Length: 276
View 1 (cartoon, rainbow, N blue to C red):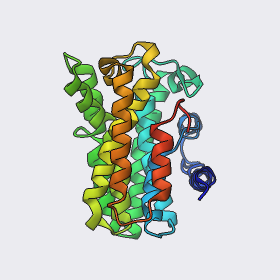
View 2 (spheres, rainbow, N blue to C red):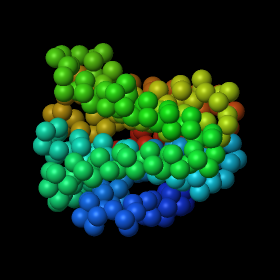
View 3 (cartoon, rainbow, N blue to C red):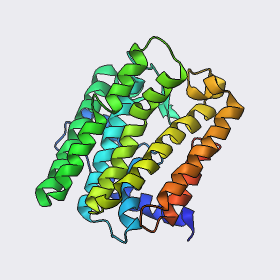
View 4 (tube, rainbow, N blue to C red):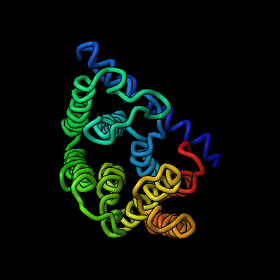
């Protein structure tokens, strides 16, 4: 297997669907703002994780699977738009380009994020209306994206008093880990292979922790408050390798053909830059 070829093939198949996600019925400026962030590049990690779980069981993704994968990306993209706003992280650049609010203004950016979040559940609902198996997946996505998941982690980041190791780990487990977990768990639901959920949860836990830690290591020079900064670069890199090994080992217990996912895991978690 040529991992890079397979990755680009799966990513390309997904992005060809994603380009058609935002309806022409959306007012033009709002649609432009939504697509600016939604189609602005990135690893497409969450949808690819979802689709890769299906592929590991020999399932060729259906159009409804690409719709659900798009819902995952819509949730992720809305969170980035809102995270960049002045009231949050106040970032001017995202993926080498001006952030959404810098290009379209704060009001339009806020509404673009709102619209993408709503669109995510429009897509998930459409999947569920065609096949009830996606109803459970939509429920998992909602739980993991909301106050007890990703949004909860973002809230903790702004309201916690002390940034000790436990607090930073808890924040990343929610803010970063829960949407990654949603992609993987929803993949097992759509594949109708929940009997292996324990191994997949072990994989997502280690993968989510390692993904955030890798980002923190790459960001050390910027002086961000992070687990990597607290541990120190050498200890953080050692822990990252341990988490990566755990994630790969968990894949062996999923009862699927996970060679692509193993290569994806190593490529993402042990990367030396923010790209893949």
